[in-house]
Amino acid sequence: MVKKLANLGFLVGVVLILSQCANKGTADGGPKDITPPIIVNSFPENFSVNFDSNEIKIYFDEYIKMKDLQKQLIISPLMDPSPEITPLGSASKYIKIKILDTLQPNTTYAFNFGESITDNNEGNVFEYYKYVFSTGSFIDSLSVTGIVTDALNKVVDERIAVLLYEVDSTFTDSIPYKQKPKYITVTDSVSGFSLENIKKGTYLLAALKEENPDYIFQQKTDKIGYKRRMITVPSDTAYVLKMFKESVDYKFKRAKQISSTTLAFGYEGPAETMAIKLLSETPEEFSSTIVKEVDKDTLNYWFRPKLEVDSLVFEVTNAKFIDTVVVKIKDFKSDSLVFKSLSSTLKLHELYKLSATIPLDSLDVSKIQIMDRDSLFLEPSVKFDTLNNIVELDFEKSESNNYKIQMLPGTFTDFYGAKNDTLNFTANTKLQETYGDVRIEVRNGVYPIIVQLTTDQGEVVESSVAIEASPVDFKSVTPGMYSLRVIFDSNQNGKYDTGDYLSKLQPERVSYASKLVEVRAGWDTIEEFILED
Image 1 (tube, rainbow, N blue to C red):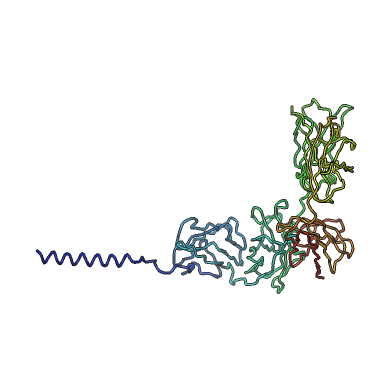
Image 2 (tube, rainbow, N blue to C red):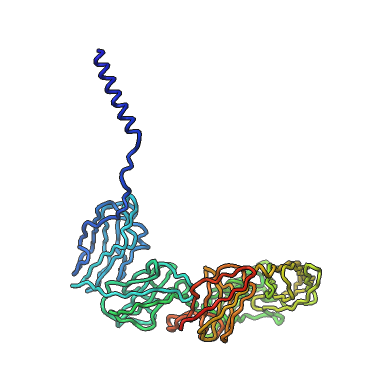
């Protein structure tokens, strides 16, 4: 019995020792798996010819998942309907592609999976796998390469679709608006592109950045780029496509009542020649005025007196467009006259601006009082922007000063005869040393040009039109880092003009300086910008 107990004690001791040894560390499972999945085989084989199957299976050496397949997968030429691809959302050792479209004869198809294939455990990406087959006796191996830029902005959008439209008996200039392309790819991380497995032929080369990708150009939302001349394949040329947002064509949208005597006429595109004419009968004392709504494509139509009618009929014209519009009239509340300051901190050369909720008929400048910090009264000059219903005051300003701006009762009379009560506003200026001055010396300019400083987001901070070779000065610039660009104003209208695909117009040329402009408080900066020929 004693011997058995001794043996039992020995065994317990051994177990305890082994247990302690085991607890000194834990196994880490070996090195982390960083290897992407490997294709074992595929049926039919990749790069098959005389393809006549309606199903493809691609097998891997481990379980895989599909990630962002709708965004990553590019099928060229496009299939309609799109193939059914599984698995989606679950792990599998194979990908199955079920083809639902009728395949074109003697055509090479390519499935580019981008970065959508990952292993199930670690998420290692199997990058840019491409499955290719041909319904003919050989694989098309020609390609078109190039780069995509932005016509106006320094930063180029990501994943721009680059498209080839085959020029055949059905081709028309409007094809990007109506049909999907023959071949498609997307730009890489450096905005380059390569359209591969293309057959010999003549093509329209274009690119789209779409809000809702369907490879059909929507002028209102999409950017487009294109080569004006058709390209021929094969070609050794590396093409450059400049993306631009077209100006939207004019279109009248709708009219609606927004107050008892105010109607809103919405539109798209340019409205410089847009006119609104009331066709309904009105009393002799009837009158109307039109004001553009700030930051909206809307013209507000104000009328007096209030009309007791069920509806009003209008004719809306713009150049060659004519629309007849019926607006239902309901019992609405009347508007009240309210003023809003559009300025607070002013630079010495800036105007003080004030907006009103109702169109103004007249103003009495003698009732406007401006007093600075030292109680000195300043004499303002007044400008009135009737289209936007904005009052602009110009007065002598000095640095680091405060201003009290008062409009006495009756300064303004609105469209309905109402007058303002006393209005009090304030404005101020900063020390000039808090700003910086910038001089831009442009070399090799073809005039006129537009010289601009912009933020990283492309917002224009300073802009000046130069009509001859002389320095361009920007005074009182807020300190910061800015991009410097020049717009070649080829049509001499003082603004940037974008392109138009149907008219075969490319955007006006824009050049950026290679380095940023640093504006420092209290400093004068001189920058030389040498334009390339």
